Length: 232
Image (cartoon, rainbow, N blue to C red; front, side):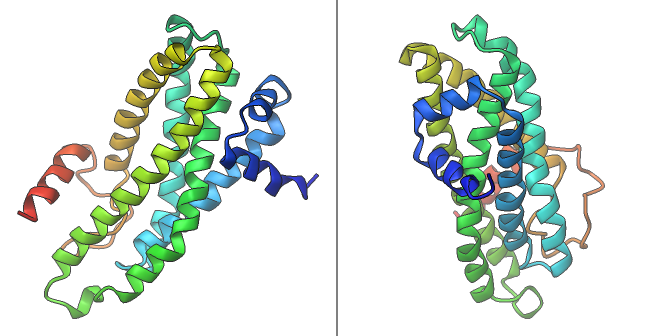
């Protein structure tokens, strides 16, 4: 029932392990659609707020690309994690592995959607791109703010995933091993997808475009390291 959908999202955010575990044991089609919709809407709203400082077109681009990154990361890691989980002691089929990962991304996306108005407020009060000689500093500050918010949402989503893995595996030790493997895949695959599909905010000294021509050059971690060291 449509009226039950907000209640299901609330149960997912609260991490009601018994209820969520029963979802994985049942028919996943309807709930999978709900969780994918939560990713598209939540991450899309956050992406629009993220790109608005550069230009309205960048807001549209980022609203498309940000949910796409989460879905590509979830699908890619589900293929890997479906094989890793049994080897690490958690007997879970690919279908349930994929659903569990999508759930964790749905939690993160709902949190990102909740932060979207705050980010929009930050962008609204930031000096506009065309009117400030310190645009690069503002750009770096916004970029680090986004890294912090996205990290917070990701940690929360993965905390809920860990609770679910502990429920399914009946062991925190098994859940810890599986979670560590899954996090490694999410981190490297998600970060590299982010690098390939950049820009998101839009660098003030580069033209507005959907993808950079050098999208396959360099990596995410190198860029963040240069940004942090630039402040010092």
